Length: 131
Length: 202
Picture 1: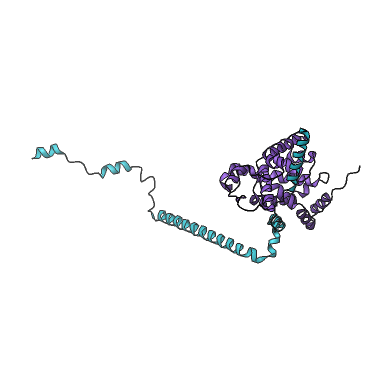
Picture 2 (picture 1 turned 90 degrees about the vertical axis):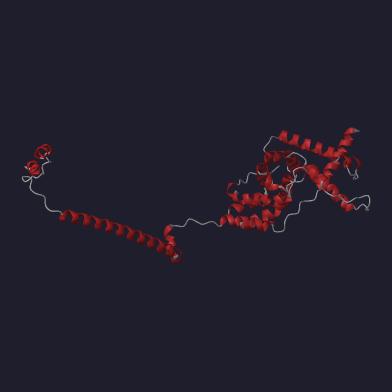
């Protein structure tokens, strides 16, 4: 009797589960799946580097900017180099204007001559006596 | 007894070769069962839309790895279940992102306002709808693995072996899952199952 009862309950449960309605699928489901696939497939392909020359409009603006940047850099470097050269020239010129140094022989008696040209210090004792 | 060739496997082999029409045919054939399965596993039809679509996108993406020796539906439902589990884990990590997702079917039903059937004439269709809703709630209250197993068994008519492959468990585990799910459902729906008519359990 219990087994029959269980079989009845099982049968009814099967019927209930089987009778459940399907969940309604959105009408644009397949279209959205295909869109998702197309989005994955549309990615920049790595074409050979020489292919870019087939489309000048794509690379010319970038090339122009690169050339301009190089020119600015080159100009800046040249200006700096020129300024440094001028400074060097000025320093060399300053050195050449200095009077030529005497020969070493003249300097041989330098100390004696220096002492001779010195003004002797006042003799305070003598001054006191004279007064 | 010779094994019948799987027509879906033939379609899938065409998909491998880039046949878009074959892929569309597979989507049209299986979008309903996949969507129903995903919606019942996730207990949320809104999220099920995105996940179900991703199932087929994943099928397309993995077409190169598909082997004709595997039954297509087993492979398909395995992908579906895995994506559902990913979504469930994502919800668990970011609960604030899915505030609309029902957490507990019982809590959800208690917050609803029902038409008072005592004051209006009982409508057969309305009663059937209400019964279906109660069955859905009972299913939603099951643990995910029991819910998946019983849906695949009762609704998709997969064999125990196929269900074991989808869920990734043994044959005996599948039988145990389905048995426990059925016992829980019978207990929860006994008011209807015993009498054969519908009474409000509250």
